[in-house]
Image (cartoon, rainbow, N blue to C red; front, side, top):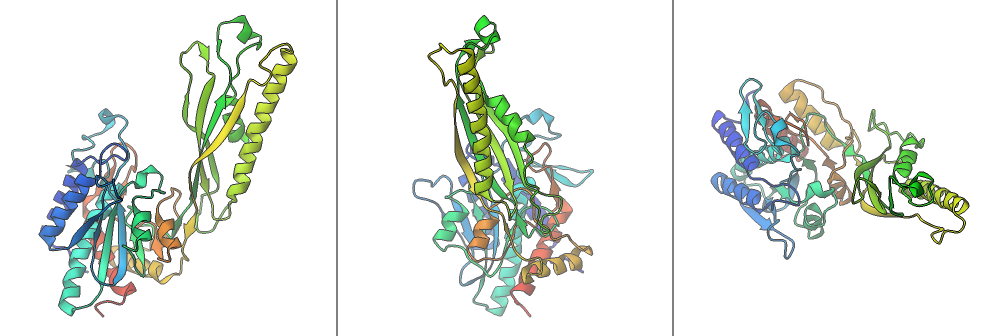
Length: 413
């Protein structure tokens, strides 16, 4: 079929995306305001109305919304990105927005997560708004460009803020993550901080050699969490995925290489299936830690009965992030509209699965908005070196988005 996206529009989309990549918006480091302002400039050139909306005293991190009148459909994308660990590993500078001519890939941090999807959604609104104006329909297609998603998909200043104030709505929504899988949901997330307090001692001392002094249980706790036979929770919407417990994703502690640390901490990242009981997982981790702490302290009491520090170790657990798994039915009309659009535009039958990483789709679903938690332009190396977006897929994605909205919302028929 003939694309609705002209060559001049494609050129504008690519140039726009390059600009967005060049504006650094690393979560927690660079404010998203400058990305939002560049999107506003693009809206002005396309004659689309937009509004910056921010939490009080967070004006440097504004969300941006487009669309007037009763909302029929909602696109969501986040403007923040993750950081770059080592820029020298990249084929092109990660914030330069450059195209590899051989592969037609646009390389850059945020190219596919999530700025490329935002560009495609914005130009979809442009094409749909022309049709809405021609037919004088009192509806709007919304796009929400949000902040702070990369902090853990549970921020109160982005999607949550817009939903709570009823600034976004729709009979359906797409979170504009990359890929042609029709993502019907995502796993849940639980992140825990384990903090252990022990006892300093010189690592070369007789006291440490004989375990008369010194206490450090963090490595043993992490090994126990990794070795535990966790329930193999499964769900047909998430093929090849189960409950996953990853201990020690971040480790902190110690002040010098020759000293047993008296304070240490570790982060534990847990991915939850829809059937997973958070209470059961948390209780098991508590039990594992308690048993190890008690076992070590009992050992010290036996080996050093005259010591004044009979309980050398203590531990605490703090929940840092928690969000639920969320899905919609694979036969939901929104899913079928997306599948049919992909068949029509790309001549392939897409998969309809939930994804492993969590995102903010659960907020939309819990608010009564059926949501595809990820569908957009083709890309890869999300959060990795040489993150990329396929330039040819951008126009195809716009065509697919237009088809989905037109059929699902029964517009222009």
